Amino acid sequence: MKTDWWKNAVLYQIYPRSFQDSNGDGIGDLKGITSRLPYLAKLGIDAIWLSPVYKSPMDDNGYDISDYEDIAPEFGTLADMEELIAEGHKHGIKMVMDLVLNHTSDEHPWFQEALKGPDNPYHDYYVWADEPNELTSAFSGSAWEYVPHLNKYYLHLFSVKQPDLNWKNPKVKEEIYDMINFWLDKGVGGFRLDVIDLIGKEPDQLITADGPELHNLIKELNQATFGSHDVVTVGETWSANTDNAKLYSNPDGSEFSMVFQFEHILLDQKGPDKWDLAPLKPADLHAVMSKWQTELVGKGWNSLFWDNHDLPRAISRFGDDSSAYREISGKMLAIYLHFLSGTPYIYQGEEIGMVNYPIADISEADDIESRNMYAERIAAGYSKEDLLRSINTKGRDNARRPVQWSSEPGAGFTTGTPWLAIHENHSWLNVENALADEHSLFYTYQELIRHRKTYPCLAQGQYERLEAGNPQVLAYRKFDENDEFIVIVNFGKGDQAYQLDYDISDYEFFMQNYADQSTKLRPYEALVFKK
Ligand code: GLC
Ligand code: CA
Image (cartoon, rainbow, N blue to C red; front, top):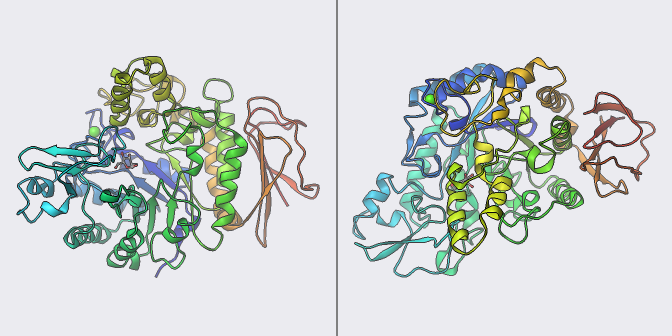
């Protein structure tokens, strides 16, 4: 039976490489995750979205898969994965697997066979052309790679080691369906579908996202696999808007449970490129969030998030990571997001307020996206300082630094040498300290998760945007037949005056992020009232 359990759920994203190492090799692993389940149960989450743990040469840290039905040895074994699923169930936590269906690794046996030539049965598993066109890779440069012995080019919308699968080939679809059913049989709680808006690509027409056959492909996928299961499916869709989101997350269940869309994430850049920084206007953010709150009602379902493994740390981006306001601004962001309709995602370390990790030289970067962009732009004449500023603001390594569990060397993440350097602030910013302080950000998240379980209004109520007469002050009313809440937050660094266009005299104080009350709205202050 389908219960739509995910509507009232809170998901927690784990980037396995950086969560918890169990054997001292400096790389997080499945046994490490299993050992931290009690911590996640204490936080109160319902499911874990696990970034890829499959066998992979790790060119893009696991988003380049060489065997979909096995686990990368550095993460453990299939038996460890089965144990994690089973132990998760004991804690009421489901495992949501990351499905990378747009491309494989070039080391996948399918691609190795495909390279043998046009007569090989696997050749048409991938996308080939005699001549490249102007399509570019998300990781810089042309999206086409020449294979001399075939005198042909293959498509890679990401790295050269991530050849794109050919979704026009029925055999590719069958293989993918079988693989998804393999994981469903193992009892997983669902799937996050990586860059799924790209699988309907028409490279000849320069169409990548949102191709003409995309929704048919998703419907077929749904029917052949997860459609009949009580699991969550979330489509990562950078190109989604509030119109096609209603297709992706159609309440009739024909596609996915929800979209994971990025409109609010694209506001602090100039033009199409995330590296071209622009200041965020809080009022623009509120407008985008409000649009998604109102337009999907009864017609779709959205994810709620500030950060993930591809984005900078939330507090560094939207709050203040360098002052006494680190936790205050973190609580403000959590409160603003968790009273909204949709399914919230907490990215590992967000719940203790981890912050960006600035680098002083490109040699400190691991991420292929940052390294390729740097090389391309240095060659084009950009200054080193500008590029490092962009990487320190937006680079993906920021959120991929190991989770800070304690003040020990290795931060309780590893007893060995971590694969990526740990932030020196782990001496004080760590889980151990967060748990010991009843006023810490961790307990704000725990409280918010509890409220979402107590008041269905938070996940599913109606939303009304309120005006506060100040562009730094974001306010809304959230209500259903039983409860009514007013959320008011100061997105700015200074004190703010505001005048709400709504009478809240019969509301009572419900929740806040400062220890005491004040007549003005202080930096990053968040207030919640309840009728
Ligand atoms: C998604 C993933 C990202 C990865 C890319 C290619 O955007 O979140 O980490 O690099 O797809 O698979
Ligand atoms: Ca390990």
